[in-house]
Image (cartoon, rainbow, N blue to C red; front, side, top):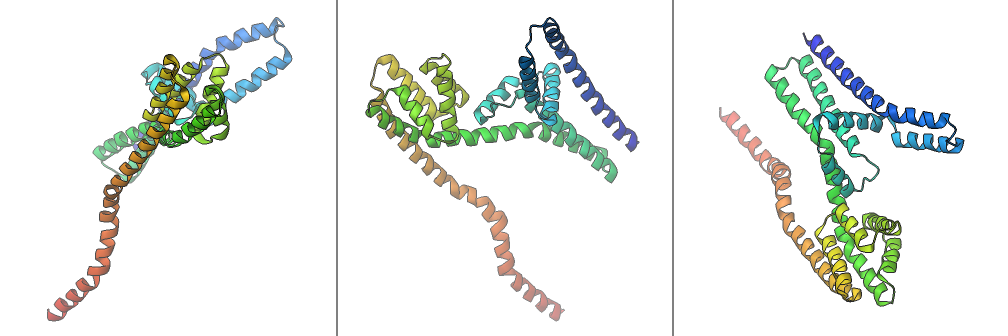
Length: 310
């Protein structure tokens, strides 16, 4: 019976993988056929064909992400998973080259693999049906949520670092604006000097501006990619100053003071949270070791006294 269950799970997994591969192969067959007809009529240069093949190979990437993307597309088509929310999480985490379908594929593969490993372990060790079912449900949910939790954690760390580096950006803008540079030139100089996620976002914003977007639209795009309270204040202040004709240097000087106060408030908040966070390792890790060291010899001596009296 157990061998039949394991064999059925393996066959079902293989069937799902083959079905997903066939689906994507059939969906991309029309495009490949059309490109082949264009090539047969002689409208494609050899260099262009080689560049297209190299770009396609680079877009497919290694076997693991490619398989995850195929499985993710299959799951998105039939299950309707929230692809838009995952794409927003990827933008917040700075993972611009990762597709949302790849994360969905990783979620499905992690859930299936976790359930399969647990079923094999439970069947070989003779667990009850209730334990088998409960473990399968718990591990399936954990495997499904683990990739998204990882992306969200990376996004929170990146956004926190952007908030921490924003006062430095405003200080640079204040100095360069008061030296006589325009706001766009000040952004270019700050993007060249800053490293980390804030520098990356600034360079991406300037690249969008060079491609035809206005400065305000490019700043709005940066705000959509990493939504934070400090960055929202910065972008709204710049846009409002441009619309009202207020001096950008004075706006940046006022923002610098406000950002310093906000950073100090965040540091005080973390300092106040530290005792609460230290309470749990203090109770569960430090106190038991202290009790063993302090009360262990006394308990041993009391035991010896009772043994001798008995």
